Amino acid sequence: MEQIETLIKRIDNDLKDVLSEERYKHCIGVMNKAEELAEKYNVDINKARLVGLAHDIAKEMTHDDKLKYVKENEIQIDDIEKINVGLLHAKIGADICKKRYGFTKEMQDAITYHTTGNKNMDDLAKILIVADKTEDGRTWEDSQKVREIADRSLDEAVIYIIDVSIKNTIDKNKLIHTDSIDTRNKLLLNNM
Ligand SMILES: [Fe+2]
Ligand SMILES: [Fe+2]
Image 1: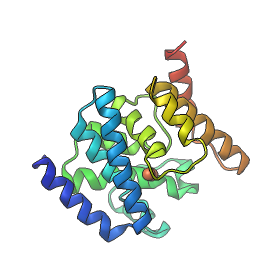
Image 2: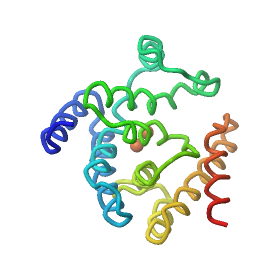
Image 3: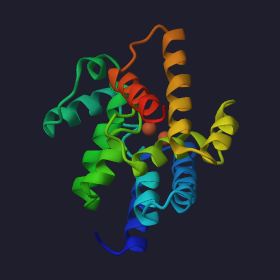
Image 4: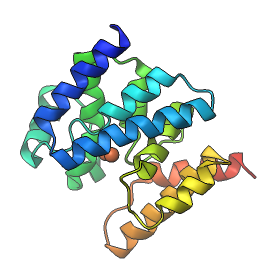
């Protein structure tokens, strides 16, 4: 990968072109929070900053553009993603970051897993999930709770986030992605 600060500047410029002001600020917030968590949990700080900054790069693509992108770039999508197309911003974002910025496989995976979780997540991926929900701009009522939990355990913070997300998904009568359930079970088993 090219020099870190040059790369950050390039991603930052690209984000300004494709994201609303509010979402752009969210991405800066996630970058800063991911850096903080990476320091705490001994994860590569530059990787954490980069995935934090770029994770939502595909978030504001239209529904049709997302479907067109996965088709043209031969990205496999599952039955739940076919119905809940919004989830695809994770896989598309990872693909963009690989092709445009040379992100490593580990960094691509972190971005791919940031919406649903995945049972094979490493600490970088867990940090991205937690930073996404706890960046300074988050006024989500559970954000403070997650910040407190993340102070003592990354796994517990991820479990809490998934629990809230599954409960919300049930309340909205939407499909629960099986990766979220697999991730929750794996983390619970690991921490028993
Ligand atoms: Fe996202
Ligand atoms: Fe996000």
